[in-house]
Length: 493
Image (cartoon, rainbow, N blue to C red; front, side, top):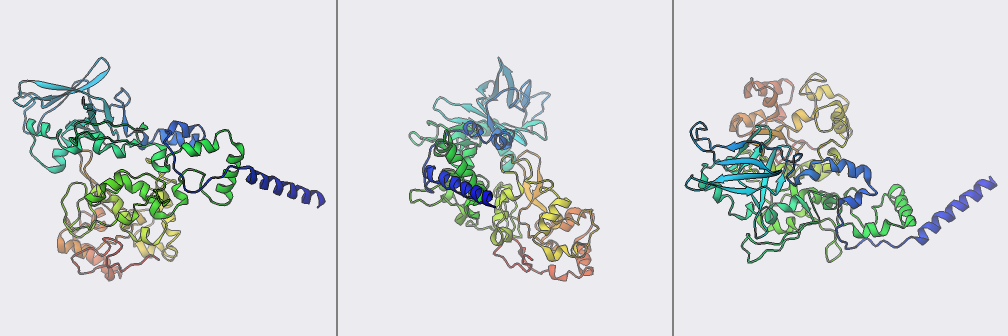
């Protein structure tokens, strides 16, 4: 006992000594960007996961491993053209290890060649950028569709507008074609913009690194690196603070240790596209950390500020006629509008791996599985007591998983040139085939029809009645679970 007491006194003295000799780490700080490679020197596990992630590889130099489009003998013809007799609207080819796109000149007798200087995306579609003399990286109008394995006119298909050589050239004039002045904010780390003459054709633009690096989510890391490098006492104290007292690491932002709204600002900055135009500068210039008043930069007051106007038709931010989010640009909105965001502490990285965003945070969480059911039922314990009575579907079959009814595929994804639907993130949506019958399934889809497309809405209505679920059949013009502020009749258990 004597020796144990001596050991404990020695241990306590050592810990107090370590804390006494550490350098102070104020909560509020301002730092500079250093680049992800520096982070990888210590955080090599997370760094290796990030290196293979879409976030890291979203923007790259054009090389054999990064160019996914056909530049061996690629070409693009308008839908109204006959490839057997007409010249292509654009040609794509490789020369001397470099990649080029040539667009037909207005008049049709010659082509203008553009060297590819950057490639954006690779999973679903790939966009090609050319460097202009004034410093602008201009987005070329023809892109590559991965599922089609063909080139396509992305914006024409998004806007369903007529295609012509004149229109291709017009697409390279507006602000949103000046990639490094408009789009690059979400594809680079620490973008520094400097417009000249406000023409959007001349600019000095720099960034710490191309792609979405560590500091996009964790904030600039120079002070964190200086505090840790060559200071073992600081490192040891930081380890104790994080693992024993749940504190964040010094001089760096860890969203998991912050309030939910601020934490999700990191994601919303790029994925929360459904905002007012007046908020764009705030979103574009956002970085995790503190403002001049020592307050954490927080976008959450604006997550659901823009109204979801039923039937809105704008590409990527469409709204179903029943008031629910429809366009891919409203996917984050469907979560921010949900009761699960409003009532619980759920976050994007509750389900998605924060370092390799292609993967799930845990096995099976991103699809209907036993694991994802167990995750949901961890909170919905009343339902878990008799799951089959809740689902009215046989265990292990479609309809028996939480995803099937509460995260239906009703978010329109057309970014790859192949239209399909992905899952809503509302997580509280309950099928109402009566509303689908009233508005038409094309205006108000429901999860029942998603699986039973050969059945009528009357069939689904009668099924719910036979299960004693008449309460879900509400005679309304707007979906009752369109957002967390609507007339929700089914609170979280």
